[in-house]
Image (cartoon, rainbow, N blue to C red; front, side):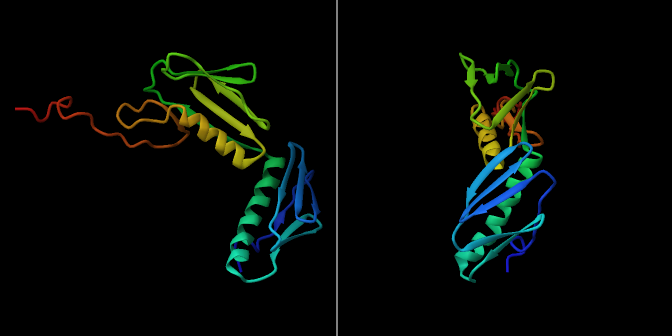
Length: 187
C-alpha cells in the first residue's frame, strides 16, 4: 500500500469537506477549492479526518492513491493557511525592479518597455522595492507555482553576470567569461 496514500488527512478547525460522487469540495477561511478524483479512488470523511482508499492493486490505482492524497492535503492546507512563493531580483541586476500598479505587477527587466503582469483569479502579488522581492500568494498550490514560474520565465537568471529573477534561496552556478576577459590565454 502507498505510504503517502494511507496517511490520514487531519482537517483543521474551520475547514469543511463535501464529497459528492467524484467531486471533492474543500471550504475554509481563505476560500474554496474543488477537484474531481479518479473513479478508482474513494475518499471517506470520518469526523475531522479524511481517508483515501483504492479499490484494487493495479499499477494505475496504486499511482493515483498517493497522488490523490497529496492533492487533497494541499487543498486542505491551501484553504486554511494558503501558499506563497517568493522571487528575488538579483542584486547584480542593475536597473531591474518590480512595483505594484493597482493589483497588477509592473516589471522593469532591462527591456525597452515595462512588462505588465495581471494576476490570474485567485492569485495576489506583493512587491517590495527595498528587498527586491516579489511574493506570489494564493490558495491553490499548483497555480501559485505556475504563476511564479511564469514571472521567473520573463527574465530567468543567467550564469555569467547573475542578472535575472530567481526563486528565494535558489543558487545559480556562475560561469567564467571569455578567456581573454580573465587575463588568461592569449600569447
